[in-house]
Amino acid sequence: MNSCSISKPRIGICVSKKKRLLSELIEIRIKKFRGKGSFIKFYIEDLNLEKCQVKGEYFNRKTKQWEEGIFPFPETIYVQCYVDQQRLKEIEQVIGQKVFNNFIFDKWQGWELLSKDTVLQHSLPHTVQMKNKVDIKHFLYYHQDIILKPIDVSTGHSSRGLFRVKLQKNNIINVFFTKKQKIKEKKFESFDTFFEWISLKISTNEYIVQQSIQTVMLDKNATDIRLNMNKNAKGKWEVSLLLMRVATNSSYIIPSTVKILSIDKLVKLYPESKLKWNNIKNEAIHIGRRICHTFDKSGYHMANIGIDLGLDANEHLWVFEVNPLPHPLNGKDPSHKKPFEYACYLAST
Image 1: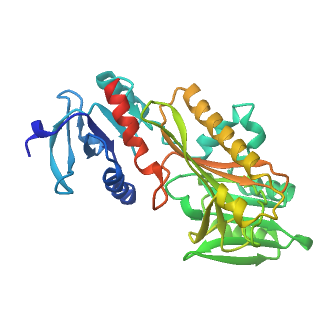
Image 2: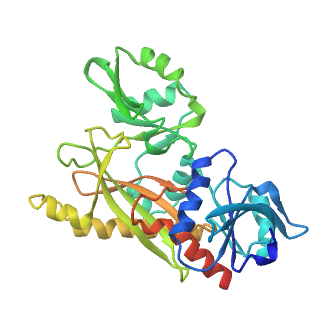
Image 3: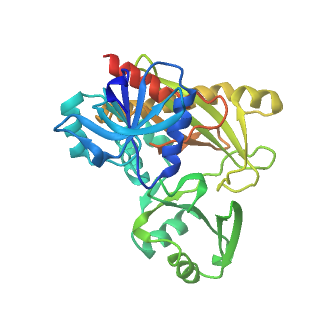
């Protein structure tokens, strides 16, 4: 196609060849976006810095089809996959500080960054990077209830790869995990038999071990809180989504089937609850803004993050993890279009 027909601002979306679901999400985001702009998705190796061109696919908003071509360099780039930091610096030499979501961190990198903030430290469960059998054993016998999480953010979403390990009386070990979107449980008579079993399923250097936090129960089911933070059309961080998720089971490991409620609905559905929902909402937002500030202060150009929080019985909020590639919820979730609103803002500055 004639690349001259591509109107400004040209918004580039750097995608992964492996993570097809994220690439498909781009089209959903575009269709929900009502502003001006042309969208080009591409692989990082197809960005030609010398010629200031990119080989990729342009989304024709009239035909709603992707069209291949070679296009002028985008004014701004939304990163949706891992890109080497040196490569990102080379791109910024061409378009300036207009490459955002430029730190696709794993769960350990995310925890390390947040743990440097003295305010956030009080909201972080005890977490270590798993290196060997001794790490798990000491952690389990100290906390009694722990979570094993895959470090890679692309493999550890929606409770995939998670194991909850509980130490019971007489050293009996219960393990909870998901299989085909159902919660499974296994019991072991000793730590050694448990470790022999878990070693066949995970690689120790690819997991973190985290203190398990028992969250408040609603209708006898486990809960967690999802907070999506986005930079808006004015370049400022804002809350685009804050919801309580109620599982269909009592386990911390939450399957894909959940009940999703706003804080306002929670107040109406559970009027007898002694929880101070407005205070909880304000504290969650405060933590979210502190996390965003931490990323900004660290020099990373982030604009779209998902935060999973847990509320314990003492109304203390815990940060379970932060996701640099959050998947918006279906429906009217503003998180769909916010990255492109911010991209247009960047392109105009």
